[in-house]
Amino acid sequence: MGEQVKLFKTWSSAFGLRIVWALKLKGIQYESIDEDLTNKSPLILQYNPVYKKIPVLVYNGRPIVESLIILEYIDETWKQNPLLPEDPHKRATARFWAKFGDDKVMSSLWQILTEQGKEREEALVQATENLKFLEEELKGKRFFGGEKIGFLDIALGWLANLVPVLEEILGFEVIDKAGFPFLSEWMLEFSSVPAIKENLPLHDKMVAKFRAYLAAAPDK
Amino acid sequence: MAASVSLFGYWASPFTLRIKWALKLKGIQYEYIEEDLPNKSPLLLQYNPVHKKIPVLVHEGKPLAESLVIMEYIDEVWKESPLLPQDPYGRAKARFWSNFADDKCVPSVMRTFVAEGEDKEKAAEEAREHLKTLESGLEGKQLFGGEKINFVDVAVGWIGIWARIVEKIADVNLIDAKTMPLLDAWFAKFLELPTIKECVPPWDKLLEHNRGFRNILTYAAT
Image (cartoon, rainbow over all chains, first blue to last red; front, side, top):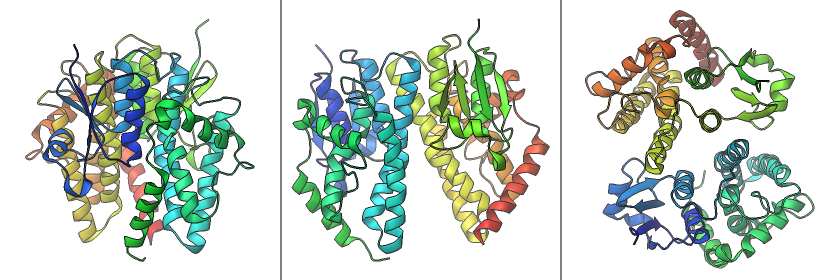
């Protein structure tokens, strides 16, 4: 029994990866469809007419879009291995930091990569400030979710995958052990969890992809 | 002893208004603290060190920031008059439209607000597109919640006031009754509800405030 679960994603998208992790952690069987974003399938345009993006989760023939919204939907639909904590304040806190990660941390890290000179230095300052908040939030805990990974770990998990890629391209560390002892440790711990480890895009492939993207980007 | 609820807000802030509406709909007593935004209180900065913004809700001594996060918290703690539907798919849709409004409608209306000339027309066209998309979220209903207001109505309904203020000040068309009749009717219906109407600041005051705000924004851009 069970309607089929379908996940439309790409091999490299951090947002799609979140959903893979959540489905794996809950032991949910699903069909995975990797999209070519230069040639989006009609299904994507049909399932996500507003944003025309992946990831899209389809269950019972109905699409759910926007990765953090999909995570909440998964958590509410399949109750094993809950991702969000029970306590409302802790839930709100997890949502707050997930949003912070997407709205502030992601863009500030991206800017380090795409900017040059003085703008890059400023981006680095901003990113460091943002990461310090996460470091503080993590303090004393093995995972953001406590003893086991939870919603916020999944929402921020892209750091474990993308920061090493970023650092290799930049040639310097952004999350260094001295400045970010907790976050550094978390990145390793998170990446070691089997459901995560088995579902991480290959580092070298990601480096190549980002290098290609930067090379193709028009000069400012 | 009743647990204390405090709301730090700003009278002209639509994000504060969302929380006032949510608290009122659930009959929650609370202490309201008006912040002087150019002169934020040390308490606010302590409660929201990350963004340093209002609204901030403090419940049992614990602060929360980000208005949609606060709304979900309120809905989970006070279970009467639920804002989000029970079923996961309905909840996902509600979250989708609330976030869509913040991600697309609000910035495009803001861009219209500060733009001039041709840029203004382009910005208005984009804003109208997003508002038209928002209309599709109604799925032909009178309110996002159907017969009663729900999370999306409370999260997004304020745009009906603010868009009209932008229309008046910037002399531009945003909520087009001809091309968005359902959206237009929704705003009218929602904003006329007594509980909702009572919390909205006087139109004249909002207009005056936003005129001043626009002057600051357009001056800062030059």
